[in-house]
Amino acid sequence: NMIDQVEASSLLAVISLIGIITNALALYAVVHYKHRHNTFGALCVLLATANFAVLLIHLLWSACAPFLFYESTISGTTGKMVGQIGVFFLDVKVYAHLGASMNRLFSLLFPFEDRRTI
Figure 1: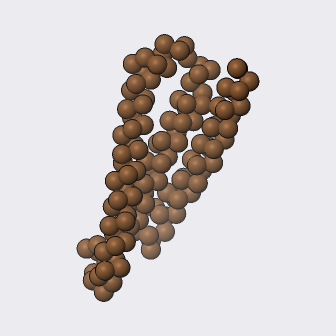
Figure 2: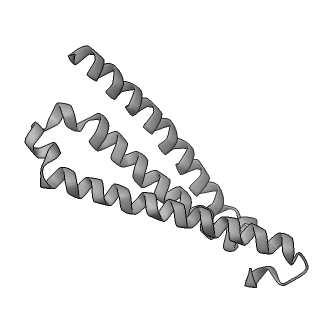
């Protein structure tokens, strides 16, 4: 049903926009505040950037593409390429989470070591 598709796409677009705004604020905070310029901050920038990219794909492709392109374009080579880019950024998010977790683990295990090496 077209009404259901419009409602689902609108909801996805709103949620994606909220996520994009909050990730942009997180990127701004980490980049512009000096006390966040450390290894954990770099991992947060990586995670926020990957989140931003995934949300942008959801906004521009998942929410808008059904209304802008033919079905063959969405399920064809272009759709597969967009999907692969999305999977790449999802993998980046997994590794960024793993890196942040390891960073926090080492910070807890070795609290008096030089922070630049953690």
